[in-house]
Length: 359
Image (cartoon, rainbow, N blue to C red; front, side):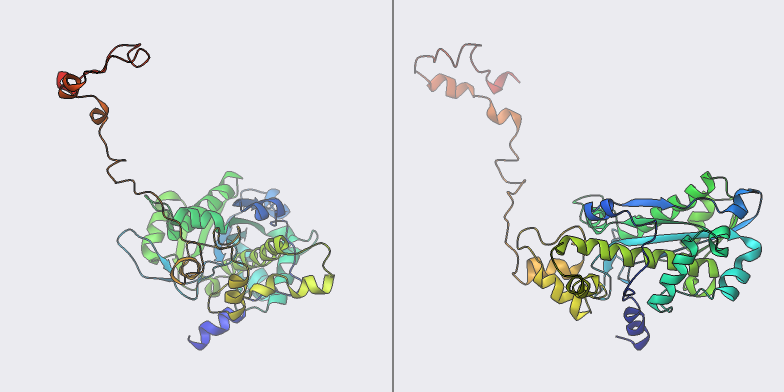
């Protein structure tokens, strides 16, 4: 693993006391349900909806992918998140305050570069009434549960791959902001796949807006940096909630903290904590709960290739029994001629079987 990539993964570790933002819907998270949270329109914009705004979008928990396949399936590499949801974050504010407020005053940067405590504090400022960030910035998140991600990727036909799921989440978040009447003039997005292809698709959907899709947009554009903080802090807190299913209310607070979300590490299969947690909490038949992406190679290997799971043999839908024609159940004329047995009164109550020859 390259040093820069290793540093990014290290920074994925949540803050010890991550801020529990309004985007945390505990019931949905524990149920494995995907959901969207939108903040109110900030006062500065609500008072004058003609104000031109800039909007950024970024994600947390997607991880790198490996390889393009004919069906457009993207297989996660060994450094892709395997535990928890993928979260898309969006943030918008007046265009005139884009750089001055976010970059110069609050020093937003890619969430993977910021220390966990710093990004948690920034998110708290965004959500706290009375702060300049609260009064100026609107934000939203789309929490895509591990269960729903895996369900889409493991479809037997018409696979809903990760890129498609991510694009749909991004587009819907932007549409929701427009639906509120916000005057968005510029949009900046961290790319999914080829930047030019993605940008052209978005330009067709939002033709009146200047759109920029770029690699490392979370380091280049302050609004994307801020969106990445919204996404990352929401994901960090969601991981804490998910771990409640493995914690007992009778467990002492210090032990619960030690065995909290940090117990499963960063969520990357390259993390020893993550792998150990998966091994220690795997059901041999059902695998894991709603927090695990079972479509990821690491999870599938533990259940199938390494022989830890129970092998289930499903009936072959293409065998002779399943592939029979309707006429196979009709009695043939020759069989009727050979049948010298007296008629069964109940069997012939509604008449005798029709020979296939009449068809």
